[in-house]
Length: 212
Picture 1 (tube, rainbow, N blue to C red):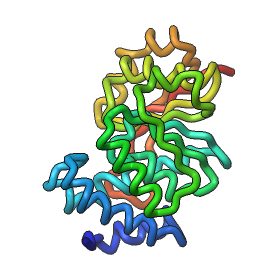
Picture 2 (picture 1 turned 120 degrees about the vertical axis):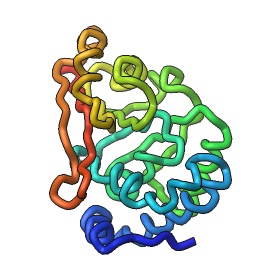
Picture 3 (picture 1 turned 135 degrees about the vertical axis):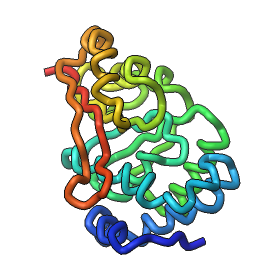
Picture 4 (picture 1 turned 60 degrees about the vertical axis):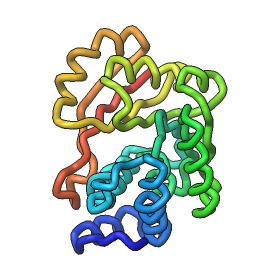
């Protein structure tokens, strides 16, 4: 199932995915078909898959250093995990997801797209602590920041970054979660934007630096 993409979104997708754009297109097809059928996304999201979901997530790749090792917590429909894996083949992604039907779908898509930089871990974030070796943790639409910090920061083993995709209330969430973040080892928390050069609605990211 081909999903329509506007000229501006296509230009952004070409800049983000480059020669891997066909993989991104196939990922969107999976989201629009089996992703909807299995309840990973609602059917009303199909017209917004590119701008609201895939591009919104993939632009976070600009925060990743070369050869980053990334854990995506609550990966669900592979957002942002699979989008980042396509945009950044030099990064290694571990998709952490507790629900079996979502895990099965993620594995099917990974195999169909032949993403050899993706591993799927079935379990909760706390179950992955000490079992995955990462320097970046990502999350989208998982929890309020105070709860999310408790899920994500321990995965870093004392050093790294959390990149949490958030909405307009990001600064307010940071203020509420500041004490929890510091207690868990966060040394700097900032609200940043990704994709401002080519997205009508840039992605808001809460960036938590852990360790030195």
